[in-house]
Image 1 (tube, rainbow, N blue to C red):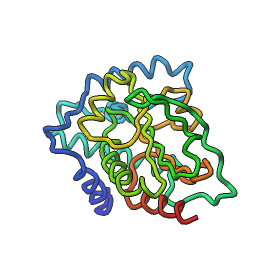
Image 2 (image 1 turned 90 degrees about the vertical axis):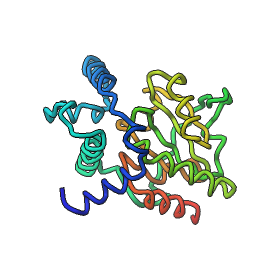
Image 3 (image 1 turned 45 degrees about the vertical axis):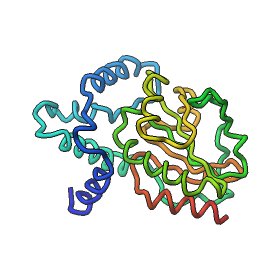
Length: 235
């Protein structure tokens, strides 16, 4: 890993809370890996980066010197993986004539209020697929909170769709703890497949006409989101 990538990783890790606030849930990660492997024969997608990269590399979890070292290895693996295999991970928007409509959906938010994507036409929408166990998601969510606070009066909203298997039992405490100020819903595999969200996090910038203007797969820079949001606002 070169010095630029080292700095890139450090900048994102700086956004995480102190080590004591985040501990790698190795038993949960391994359980999820086994579950996904069992279902692989009849499912097309998987959240492979959770623990799988560590297991495949043969790195004993307990041998790592610190939680931060574990986090750095995970973030670095995400950076390398997505930069190699995902041509849809983008900074910069798609020209309007080439955009596809964002699949419509309706899900209840944490208060039980239904949120329908098509009701947000006329607004710029940042749609984020995430999970509470996703470390890169933890880096990005404070940015989305800031975007919501800064831009909501200008016709912008963030929507979070959690893919946690534990549903609201996991998501509601996370919302409260991290003071998430935008609508969060609990989604499912069918919705994720409609969007082609095969990895977490995956985030879409949706224009005022309901078309997907930009797609970000994996962890990317805050400035990339800001640039895409600004570009769509200025259309």
